[in-house]
Image 1 (cartoon, rainbow, N blue to C red):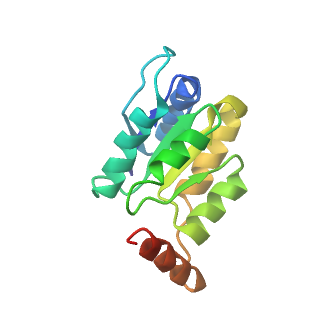
Image 2: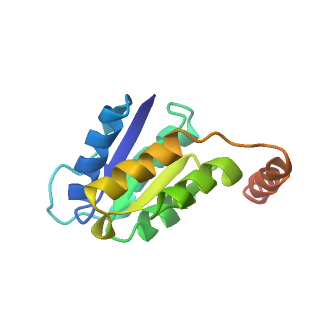
Image 3: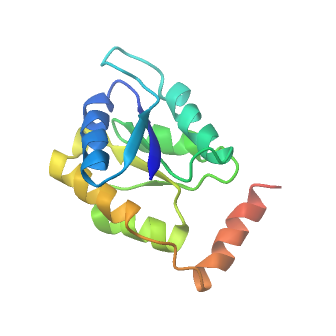
Length: 146
């Protein structure tokens, strides 16, 4: 799978680890920046990945900032994006299985390299379960059209 990825300055080191993890797991990251630890505004980079998912260019995306919160809040402003903040593999797995999360947000300042790989692996290898969860996704989608 081709997966766009972006970070702000605080998430940059973790984004670089996430790119390596994606490649190790057989996926191809597309890096939307930032490309160093110079201070930038996270919404500028969250918008790039969220727009690519909204437009259907990519099925899923990954965003990284210091806490993961700012990226997640920004991404969830985009129609059809269901961004989830995950700090454990279990949270990532459930976000995909139950919430059909299509953007994974990582708290870069709080994760080790092993954590990042395990979280990404859990998320990309989990499929949406549908069933009782589908009606909830439909309600999320309906609320974004209000």
